[in-house]
Amino acid sequence: MEFNSITDFRSNFTQVYHKEVSPKLQGFEGERGKVKLICNIVWIIAIIICALVGFYAYKIADMDILGFVILPLLLGAAITGFLSKNFETKLKKAVMPIAMKAFGDFVWTNASVIDKYTLKETRLFDRFENKTDDDSFYGTYHGLHININETRLTYTTRDSDGHRHTHTEFKGVIAQIDFNKSFKGHTIIRKREFLNSKVYDEIKLEDPEFSKMYFVDGSDQVESRYILTTSFIERFKNVKKAFGASGIEASLKDNKILIAISTSKDMFKLGNINKPVNDTKQFNELLNEFLSILAIVDELKLNQNIGL
Image (cartoon, rainbow, N blue to C red; front, side, top):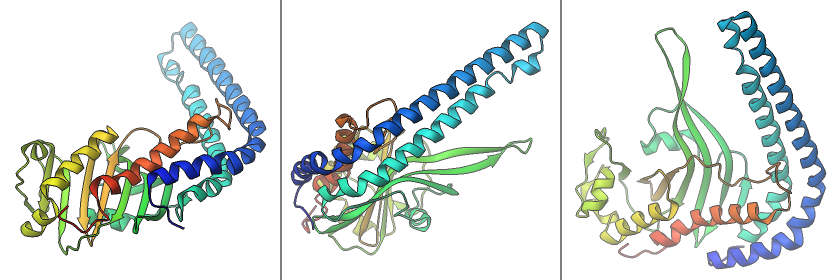
């Protein structure tokens, strides 16, 4: 079942949350308390070990041992992070399928809905080797199929000593949306940098503000301008302002638009062990984050086959 507007989603979510989600949450409050207690104990042990190692190193003036002081804290962070994430995943698997009843045919999953090949084809991410996914959604809005994938793209390098280093090329949310306007070529919208590498010939646009912010190139100059009309460009700038993200880039190919929204924030988060599981604030925040992605369709008028 598909609903017609974001207003529908908000209204439906309120009803579904109070009638079905909230009662389901009660069984997780005790487990949240246990996980929080274990995490606190882990941190106490880590701090004690850290203090003992530091005191011992200070007493014998051994700088090599002093370098190990931070290890208990790193280990404590890793353990508590794992326990917290494990609790969040368990909670989501139980309540998200119920919560998604508010959003028509949309489905939540912690599996990937946009594959590595598709991302490589956009030419927005040329360096990444590994893709780590968190929350994903897929469904239909205004007749358009939408895939939403929270992901992190990384690549590795080696220094002169042969040590491996992991670098993040992208972290944030990627949305792949049907575009109700036919085109055969490929148009890429990337952040303007000091030296942008060209995939195709640069597209010169009439909007100086947009050109200052973005570097646009495409396989077909005429087609790219057919897509990137003045009104579409203005709407794209509005999307960036609405998200306040560090960067928004896009690839238009095969009658779809893929929008990459860079953000360091952990999106769609639930199950904060420091808050009651029925804390409505976290659910409202998840709702707003999900609907903000769908608002892109409304803002860019992707479902309307007009002059865009």
